[in-house]
Image (tube, rainbow, N blue to C red; front, side):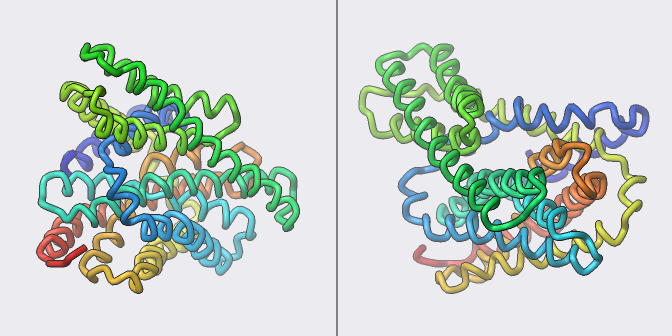
Length: 366
């Protein structure tokens, strides 16, 4: 989607929400997590190159690991200044640590962006989604037991890490089985159905087994594409690629419409200190997180792209809306999530093309 198209869809959603306030608020959270997220994850993973990921694994791991934790801590610190307890503050940080660079990737696909830069930005979004959800569950679990002590957090961390590892194994296993079934099968409808099984099957199978559905779908998409590119007897039709491109477009349109429809602008000013502290923290965190890559030798123009790629989207909103009613500061967290999503979308819209053009003009051997 082009940037103006994203804003137009959000605007249509906001207009709908004026006449039907709150009608799609519940739907946004559940539809994002269980309907739209699997195909969006799969389509992004399907378009990645395994070898490119391996070459840039250090930068990707830095952004998706320490970068997520650092973002959450910066948000928690900013909220502590306005006297929000550490638990809800850290939970807010976890929710808003997942980036959604749809606007940036849309520009990438229309411009000749260096493959290395595109790989880092897209992989950061994919993998930090998974890590952010893990952190979200850790903090939410600790709040549920009424303690953020080391023992409770340690147990939840181990469970989450095991769930992530298990999700990866499950996703790769499902992709392997599906790839074997696709060998020698040129029927497009069958291939589309098979790839859909990887997208949704890995996600829901992992959920049933208490594993990470996000890691499972990402791993499944990357693995299936790897098999398709390396197995001589496995050939995926171009129509399958077009199907997933269209599927991702439809999912994005519906998600951005639901975001606009669920937004209640009047409520964003109910706790201004909470919202303003969160907005400032997110802006600061992108500068700090991008700075983690300075020792890696990437051009500064590339780091600027990583900074503006920090758009927050449907996953953050879905996690906020999925919070149990009794979570402290729940409504403030939801309001801040909407405010951050709108602010980062607007910021990306105003800056992304100029920043990407400058990065594209940068000559480097990376």
